[in-house]
Length: 126
Image (cartoon, rainbow, N blue to C red; front, side):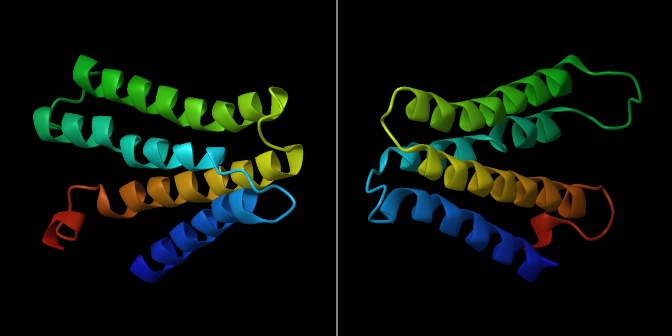
């Protein structure tokens, strides 16, 4: 499973790099999305440390973390579109970057689905 996740991350970064480095596009502004990739899991990881999962009721800290994560992910999808509308990057580069976003955020979601449960097999062992 770890190899699938790393393969997904590599494919997503390949799409991002293709959107930047192909000679037709040759603009590196979409690399700012790397900040969004790094920032997106942080609120959820912090809330997992703070919140006790034994309470089945809704928790404000966990909901705030999900809200912040959603805002980061939507911003990551919106930035290439804003760049393309402002003619900073080409629409083809925008399509490649958005494809990379889908793959990368799918990989991040897969990581938390596989290793985020509270069973004996968790990512904290690594």
